[in-house]
Image 1 (cartoon, rainbow, N blue to C red):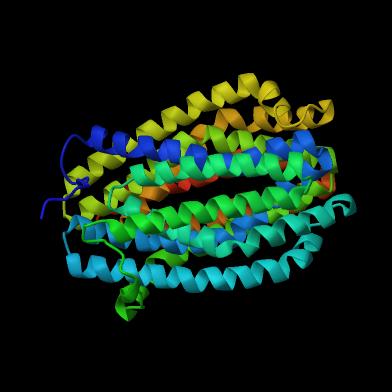
Image 2 (cartoon, one colour):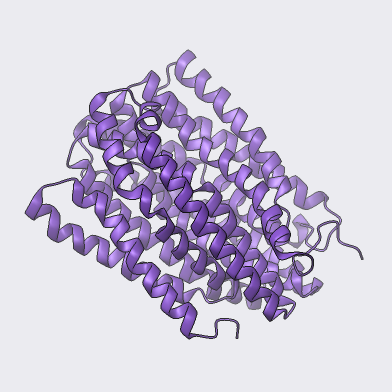
Length: 443
């Protein structure tokens, strides 16, 4: 049967990767708009304290969601391989097992997130002035966990089979909903940071439902049938084996970032707001890189499934080169225009100063971050998820936390927090380069 979605196992490599990455880029752009719109509206309508509350919540949110997203990425690798190999039966089982996993995980995340948010906010040394708003934001956010988890599950399936267009369409719709609800809840009904969280939850649930409808309506082999949703033990073991290292990696890195955030919090609201504003700028700036690395994982997975090893190597080299060059160009732009970018979130001179300092410390080293991410994506597509986990845990967790634990008490300088990221990006890049060059990662 002819596929409406053509696999990435044939045709010009640069076209396949680039034209798959472009809808991902636009989709990631709208995805990033969720939190950024919240920050823009919160910062301009509610002030620096509310912006600090929203900004400081990001690491905690990613710590919980990142674990499940990592496991979902393992499922995507399996889906892409079976799709590339035209193995209809195992493709069907993988899709329905992955959805079953997402339903269970979404319910558990709701309970964990809502119950633990107050305590974790205290562990992060959040200033008393923003504790209440931080807890409100997090609890409302996590109450919609099922929508977030299932959206990531559905999008992972669609992207694994080469469909990056439909997720884009649904993100456009949900982003518009998020923007409208943010303005209505905050500017009209004055609901505070809780309204920003609720707007994000509603819009994310809408995008998840649209993805669900697409998967149920498609005529392709990966069609989702509700009555078929169940766990297949063999497939579930594969999903966990490949996805668990990525999930653990995401959560531990996020935990390390929570510790970093606690160091930032100790410097006060203005530092929190400035650092949070920069994080949004970096998030937007890195969207093209994230898009190409996601395309790389799908490309590698499908071509290895089809046993096209030479094509896999060529595609990997192309993707790595593109991400590194793009990252450095973006870094130069961020370095030059950092004051204007930070000011869009908060016009306070002190907030702008902290945000610009962070931007001009990190931006010119984006090429290192891109190199690490691109190699990790290639290895994940090949099913070698343990190596990225080990390298990133050591470099981005152990080294970061150790560095800050030593330097902050000695210097009492926020500059140590700024520099810990470029230093650990360089370290991980060296480790990935050595592994990539000296091992046969295709086998």
